[in-house]
Length: 341
Image (cartoon, rainbow, N blue to C red; front, side, top):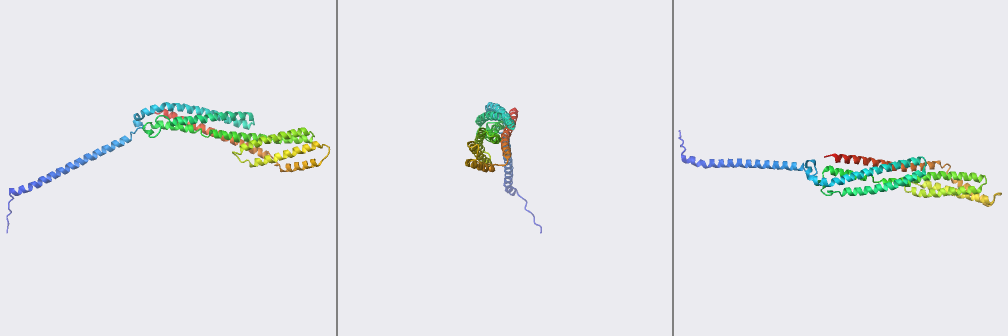
């Protein structure tokens, strides 16, 4: 059976009206909330972009050169003066290199007076280089703006320029030690080589004089030979700081023993020139024993001493040339940094 629907009355329609209004207000609120959230996200994005931009334009970078302008202006005179000081250092090291090469040439030619002069001049010059390098390093480290957070006050270019000049001053470190090795090692060994050769020559001429019966001449030459051993022993002591001198020490001991024995023989022979006495026989036996202990050939030892001498000089010359290279590179780098706007 058909049922008739009851027509909707105006009262029922009024009952649903508040629900529609509530849903509309909720929808409008949601749209407003999302709009506000989008605004916040956009603001955050803009803030982050500003932060990144700020980080990319910090003080000390070319992008914000005006932020370190005052610090760069304050440090510039000191950097310019330091560059001139490094140029002076470079000239002094060049002169030291010339002295080192001259010492090497004098050694090769056995010109001991020239070698001595070069060593003395170099010793005075290397002390000046050491002191000036120390003062330059101190001045560079105390330049205006240097210290904690210096990147906020000094541009990267000027900090690099300063550090390059400090490295140039440090490049001379060790030159005094290298020159000392030349003096104590190279020069001492060179003199020692000459003294050993001179000793052998004097003993040979002393024996020749003894055979000819000129005892007085023989004794004088033996005394001169022993004096060279005294000088050689003093040099051996200096040389012991850098090389092993055990073989040299033994060589000097045996040669000194022979000098003493040979002299005693000629003294005994002089007292009894016409006959062989007991003293002469004892002196002959002592001379033979000392002679048997002598090395068969001393030329090898002389060559070793000469090589030690050249090694000491070569080490000093190489150290100087290395310092010259560092100074030249530092000056070029400092000049390029100075020219950079």
